[in-house]
Image 1 (cartoon, helix red, strand yellow):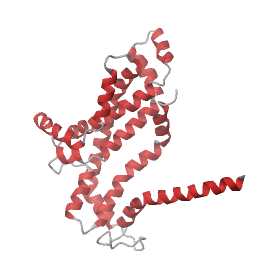
Image 2 (cartoon, rainbow, N blue to C red):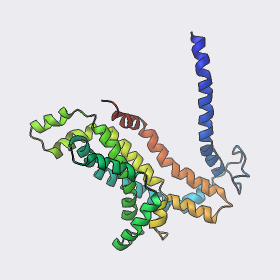
Image 3 (cartoon, rainbow, N blue to C red):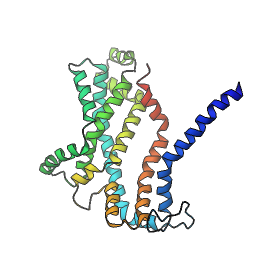
Image 4 (cartoon, helix red, strand yellow):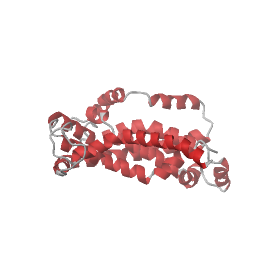
Length: 272
């Protein structure tokens, strides 16, 4: 019996390893090229035998400001998205509102709108409000992408919370806001972390809003920094790949730290 089980699982294990290696190979090649002094990615060896950190020195000197800009914008987008989406998700999960189905359908449609359409629409508005080339402008623009997703994730989770929890608080004299803040928000910690992490990743990887809503060099996200490298340093891929590695580190760290909360937050709304 044990031999039969092993014979069945071994091919699946080998297939999983092959697929994982195939998916992770671009990441390996990015790190590999960043550690080599070769002029092009094609001329780099398969293993970094002659390791150099020149690419990272150049990336740190040129891209540190852009990296900090992305961090500020991504964290700001997370705060705005959660502040708006959390009470909205609570209202959708607890109150019978007229037209709620239409509203949820509109949220789904909002996820399908191409970023370039939203960016072009926001350009004229932000120009009139003086929000071009500013942190608030980029934060608000990226929040437009994170808010609908956060509402959908958290409302699904909050529906699985027993209504008796808030009803008991209401009987004790708590207002809807007090019940929401003292009971729903702590219980929904996993879904908040999940929604916040995805909002961070949306803003962190944004290119279209940064390209459309910024025209100067003072405020520029890291994605535009890589884009500038590709325009001016195509023959020197070390700094390009080093910048890509630097930009991937914060997202990887957050994913590792929040892995347990992501699994619970994403699946919690499906199980009552």
